[in-house]
Length: 77
Image (cartoon, rainbow, N blue to C red; front, side, top):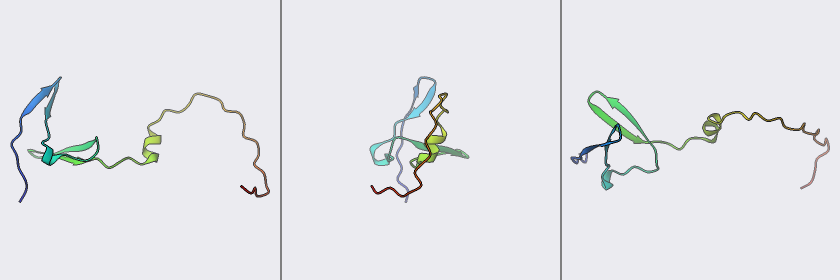
């Protein structure tokens, strides 16, 4: 059986909001919301990968000095 609880809707600026009761808290600080007919479905957002985060960054408008050619012989660290 699905847990259920009546909650109040309120306005937050121009947005409608709902306070999520403690027993329904989601992990993290982001969620995905979708609409399915009359139902709103909220699911926890998966952490984004490093590649996804890097894809959101703007390119640098900066010149970098040339990289010297790497040594051919193996280097012991």
